[in-house]
Length: 195
Image 1 (cartoon, helix red, strand yellow):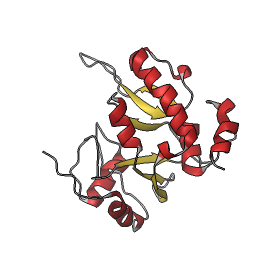
Image 2 (cartoon, rainbow, N blue to C red):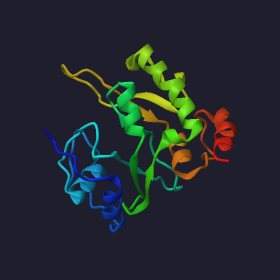
Image 3 (cartoon, helix red, strand yellow):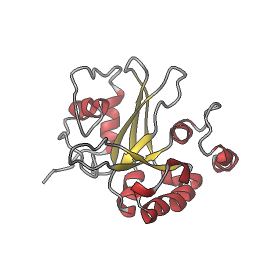
Image 4 (tube, helix red, strand yellow):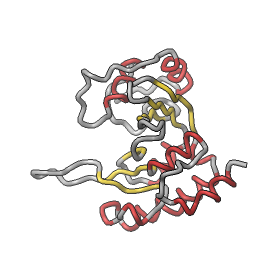
């Protein structure tokens, strides 16, 4: 059994000392290369357990050339409401720019924000009840079910839960990207939650 002994704050302190991540040698199927490099730096077992740390989860993302979150932000592929909630209770989130320089590192608790909690309570049970493979990304606004794997010969496609790109940017930076459209009608409600 995997022994989770490191806490988020300890991992945060270690990663905070890093400036650039070298991901060129990383070729991983179940993890992003940035997450894999960070797990090596932290001395964690390289795996895809429910939790990376005793008290939370490591998540990574990239910025685009406009310094906005580049892609939808993956939460996980296990569709158990309690497990998803547990993951979202305590995240160590690391973001890198186009040169793999760490420009964002924060410990976040998304469900402490009333806007994200409300959207979670509406959208995630809806996706689970309908079935992740039966949901279109247009069915929900903030939390989305998105195909993670291509499937192929004898391997079924698999859907994971994500926070849509513009809402991930809003979660990390408190602002909704100007060019984004996904769930834009919710921006005023989100801004109220920040006051």
